[in-house]
Each structure stands twice: as structure tokens, then as C-alpha cells.
Length: 423
Image (cartoon, rainbow, N blue to C red; front, side):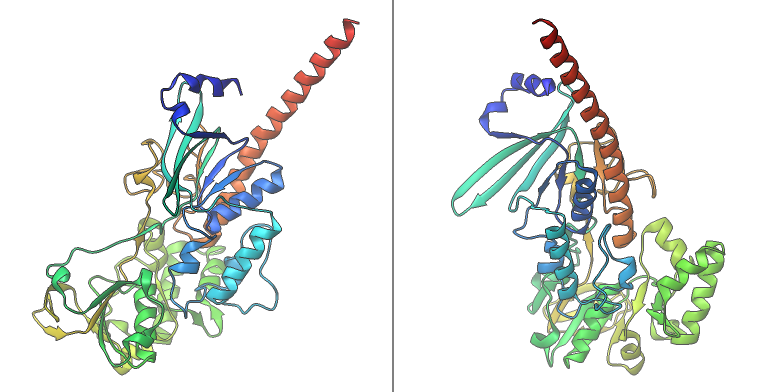
């Protein structure tokens, strides 16, 4: 606590409201932040969760489409200490997953401070503490707060802000342009020619949803992509891969997955979907690129209900020209171009995080930095990776917390004995 008084020398200490947090500050109340908070609660460590939105899991509640379900079986998506309800299906819906997260927060008494947008966080070497500055706005009232803490947990995740591509002529396009961030349903696009830019899991599923709502989607496939069936002979492809990796090397599992994919889907390359030279698991481990788990879009591609087109050269009014010279009239554009980390915009640190907003050290070593800095949810391994990080972070902080608590008790007891001996 004596380190806190060293902050008084800084000129802006009294210019804003300051709050001492007796434990870690967790930035982000998504699944990663909630998992870390729950594990800290189990360790008996107090914490503070800061969230820029007005709810937990804002990505799931406000920035996902209506038909979304978990792409992996629920046992690979549950957070630490609390499994999904038994009556939930193998692939829970968006609504069910949000219900699970809300019950998780109640179970572990996690009460984030909402509408607190972190402007900056830096380590103060003089005091040995982290200084986290936030801004919250209520109506016309703007409030600035500085949180002082010993530990900082970055839980803003891989998908904090959407990626907007730079395409010639896109700003002059006369039709509707939305990012997948704002897409809810294909109902409003019924009867329209829609260009979906991106062929990852979101691009594939939005194209499927558009087709199901009687729109005419064209999906841009600019580079190679792995498409795997979500299930093989009634078994989750992901679960099968996890099982095989216990006994076989990764390269061999990749070979087997591609053989199974060929048996179920056939040759996808004749439909404009070129496979990468690296296997799906190798590509995921080395570049973080997730294979598409098909839930019906490929059948629509095969039937012609979803049109596969090459990379875009430019837009001209309501017409798009592709790199192969062909042109297409479109009514709307949906940008399924992904998301990125926003950590570099607020964390003033350069040793642990790289410029792309991810920890520099690869999995499984990217959860702990120096001076009490931690990262959760940046493994590119989904909810199971975030859960693994959360458990390790809570144990690491918990060990220090318990040791310091023990030492404080010993000092208090020794002082009490000295006071008694004077009488």
C-alpha cells in the first residue's frame, strides 16, 4: 500500500477520481474476462471488471447474427467451474449461450463496471503499480476515473473491433454496405443480389442465411480456404481431431481430416474453393486461420444458390468488377472481413504485446507478461483456450495473493504481541 503514496508526486493524480483496486483489474466482460473473474473468485482474490459496453458479452449480445450457434460441441465451449445445462443441445444457440454467460456471472457474483471505456493503461515504475484510465458518459456528463492496481488482466479479446477493407470505389457504391458486425438476418435482403466479402465461417454462414431468405448471394473467395464438414458420420470433426491428436502426429491427423472431408464434401476446388498447401490444423497453429466448419453452405454452392466469385478489383456505382475481368450488378454488400484486437490503442506497453494486438510469445506461453500483466483470450483457440488461460492466471495471482495475505497476518500478529508486552 505504501507504493500508492508514491503516485502523489504525479501532477495529474488529483485531477481525476482515483480508485485503489485491492486485486487485479480485468479489462473486458466477455467470456474471457468472466472466466478469469470466476477463477479468481474461487481463489479468494478480489477483482474489478471494466466493460465499455452496457452488458456482459457485448459481442454476442449486440454484434452477432440471429441464426448463430456455437460451431463446436458445448463441452469444448463451457467456461471453468460451470458446465452447460444438460438440456442444452450439442450446439447451443446464441440465445442459450448468452443465458449461460448471464447465469455464470450470477453464480460467481461478477458485477462489472459497465460503460467504462479504457483510454489508457500503463505501468508506473515509480510505484510498481498499474494505472488504468477510463471515461464513461451518461447523457451530457463525462466522468474520468483512474484505477490503481497491482495486476492488470487484458481480456478484450481477438475481436474487439471490426476490420473494414480498403477497396477501390467502395465508398462510392450506391447500395447498402454493412459489416457482419451489424448483420442480423437475411430477411431485409430478400430478392436482392448481395455480395458477401469474405469466405470464413461468418462469410459462409451469412451467405447461407441470405440464400435461405431468397436473396441471391455471391461470396468473394480471394484466397485459399479449408472447408470441413462440421460432423463426420455423426461425430464432431473437431472432437474427432482432438481424439486423434492424442495418438497421432499433427500432419497425419491433417491428412485424415482432408480424406474425410473429401468423402463427405467431394472435390471443393471445382466450385472455386482452393485448399491451402498446409493442412487445416497446421494452418490454425501457425497462422491462426480457422477452417470453415460447413453447416450447409457448401450444398448451396454446389447447387448454384450461392455464387463463388474471385477477388474484387473495384466498384463502380452498383457494379463490381473482379480480378478476372468479369462484372456483376449488386444491390448490397456485406463485409464479412473479420475483427481484430484493439489492445495497441490503449495499452502503453511494448514488451508483451506486439503491434497486431496479440501476445508476442506463442501458445501456450502468451498468458503472462512482466510486472503483473496478463492476457486471456488471445490464443486463437476459442473458448477452450480462453478457459485454459483464465485458470492459469487465477492460480498465478492467487499464489502471490495468499503469500502476501499470510505475511500481512504474521506482521499483524507480531505487532499485537509487542503491544501486549509493554503492559
